[in-house]
Structures are given as C-alpha cells and as structure tokens.
Image (cartoon, rainbow, N blue to C red):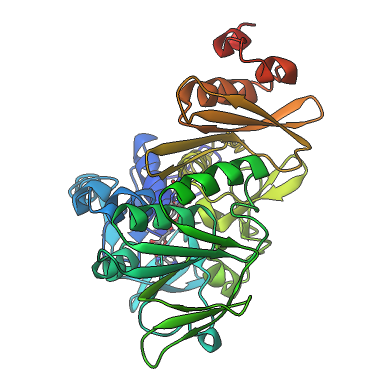
Length: 411
Ligand SMILES: Cc1cc2nc3c(=O)[nH]c(=O)nc-3n(C[C@H](O)[C@H](O)[C@H](O)COP(=O)(O)OP(=O)(O)OC[C@H]3O[C@@H](n4cnc5c(N)ncnc54)[C@H](O)[C@@H]3O)c2cc1C
C-alpha cells in the first residue's frame, strides 16, 4: 500500500503503547489504513489513561478496567498487533527494523510515542531506599497503594500538579502529609502566584503541611526510608515518600538511533523526525510553535498530535497546531486551564459565582494567553473559546464582576 504521496507503507510500527500510541493506531484504522500495524509497549497493561493514577484510582474509587483506553478486544478486532511487556531496544534505520523483545520487526513507517520518564531522587539522597515512589505508571501506583494507611506520615517532594494531587489523595484518606517545594512557591513553573495561593490555602484547609523554599537534603533509613532531613535543617520521621519532581522526555531510543533531539524528539510541523520514515507524538516530541520549540505534557496534546501524525503518515501534510488545555483535580476543586501562559505580564482575577470558585486570566499586553479556572466551568469554556479564536477581551471587562462572560463570545 502507498500513501497519498506515494510512500510505501504496508507496515507501520508504533513504539510506546500509551495515550499517544493508542490514539495514533486507532486514527490510522479510522483513516482507512489497512496494512499491518504493530504497537509495542513495555508495560504490562494495555494502553490506559494516566490522569486517574494520581486522582480517583489512587483514592481507590476507580476500577482497573476503567483506566483502559479501549477494551482489550479492540486490538485484535482491528488487526493491531499489540506487543505488551515488550521493550523496544533499538531501531535499525538502515534496514528499517525495530529490535524488541528478541524479535526484529520490519517497518515502512515508524512512530515513536515513548512518553516521558519521571525524575527520581539520586541514590546518594536515598532515592533507592524502599518506600520511595514516583507516580508515572500503574505499577508505581499499585506498589504504593498499601502505604496509604490512615495516620501514616507521607513526605511529598515537589509541589507541581502530580505532588499536589498525591497530597490531596493522601490527606483525603487520613494520612499526615508534609509537602516540600524547593522553589519559593508551589506551582511556580506552571502558574501565577494567584493560582499558587489558591491551592496553598486549599491544602492548608485540609491539614497539609506545605513548606516552600525548602528542599530535601537527604532521606535516611537502613533499607527502607524512615526519615528525611530538609535543607533548613529540619528532621522528619516519615513512613514513605512520593517524589514528584518532574519528567524528562523519553528520547534514549531515538538518540541511540541518531535522530535529532532538542528537549524531546525533534519533529517538524507535521510530526516527522529528522528521518522521513520516522514520526513522533506526545510527551516525547518537541515541535515548532510560534518560532520556538514546544513540548507539552498533557493528554489533549498526546491525542491531538498523535491523530494529526497518523493523518500525515497517510500523506495529509497538515501541520499540527496545538489548542492547549489541561486539568487537575484536588479535593472537590476542579482546575481547568486553557492556553499557555508563557510570557504573561499580568494576571486578572475574577471571582466565580459559587463559593470558592475563581478564575485567573493571563495577559501579555492586551493579548489573552491563558485562563486558570477553579470550579468555574464557564470561565474555562469562555476563555478557551476566546483563546482558540485568537480573541482578547478587555481586561477591565474580565475584572468587572458585572460582566456576563458569555457575552464576550459574541462577535
Ligand atoms: C499521575 C499522572 C497524572 C496526570 N494527570 C494529567 C491530567 O490531569 N491532565 C493531563 O492532561 N495530563 C495528565 N498527565 C499527563 C499525561 O498522562 C501524559 O501527558 C500522557 O500520558 C502522554 O501520553 P504519551 O502517549 O506521550 O505517553 P505515555 O502515556 O506515558 O505513554 C508512553 C508509553 O511508552 C512506553 N515506552 C517508552 N519507551 C518504550 C520502549 N523503548 N519500548 C516500549 N515501550 C516504551 C512507556 O512505558 C509508556 O507506556 C498525568 C500524568 C501522570 C503520570
């Protein structure tokens, strides 16, 4: 079979059976690709959604099967060879083959959807002690689940979304929670001080002890972690530790194969790597955006980019233009984020209609960049539609509680 551009594509191999990989293979079939598809994943479970891992699944309110993106029968029914528990070890670009699980799998076109790798604490800081966890995969969460005993003391290292969500679950389940953030404030990398203040107060109201500007010096314990020394000299006794200090894109395989890497596997506007037969999508890929390179770590990006890449593998030649959005659930607060706030120079606060609801609108000059909406679906929806349409309401109108938000959508 040839695609619309005449490229031979009887066989497509996709490495990484996560959100982007699953979306990519499904889109290929939806687009009418009837050649061979192999989806290779090193994890044991079929492709699943990660967001509930630090939310409902960790709370014990979601069954395993509900995590799966598609029923297991979907793959054989759609003639997709799903290789689970199989790590791709190398790409032989000259011979167009993937070496995985002792097999050599030929491809005409290859897609890399390898996701990202959580940063771990180095061994010299106690990162290899038992009782120290990261939250990336199902196996991580299943391993830490027995630690969530009422009254246990958990130390969470890192005040980003993953750390804060884990803190919310732990506090909701009756654990004692201490969270340390080395930066001056939680969410510093991703949000304005207003949003940090909102979530600091929320966690404080649930008894979480948040310490900002305080790093971890070292974890202590024989084989298993029993304590922690913080950068301000404080010593804590802890029962277990969750490390949420960010991720790095999973580029090792691509690098070893000689593909260009620049904060992720470097792709062009269509999702193609420096090898025209190899494509990439999701957390692992960095793409051109407004004169710079961008890499996003979110479900919407993984789905949208993977679907666009599938179309482009079929010859569509449509550039990928992200319409970023994100969410986080902590206690009974749903945070919804539209847009990207990089480069903002002011933030307009707007109170929501219900108690505790609020939104923060990020502007650069008069241009609306992003909105953080806490339990305010309307602010999120209006903000997203305005941003996607490239429209910027007058900041004064946003700040004015008498402004009817939906009226801002009128042309
Ligand atoms: C706990 C948690 C909560 C999150 N919450 C949110 C949220 O609320 N909202 C949101 O938008 N995003 C959230 N995210 C981020 C979101 O889940 C990711 O951005 C998304 O999963 C990225 O999809 P992906 O396919 O690129 O990577 P992944 O879903 O990580 O899939 C990559 C897969 O490739 C596999 N792989 C890597 N290398 C190889 C290899 N050599 N051989 C075989 N397999 C390989 C990996 O094991 C993995 O299974 C969360 C992430 C986590 C971990």
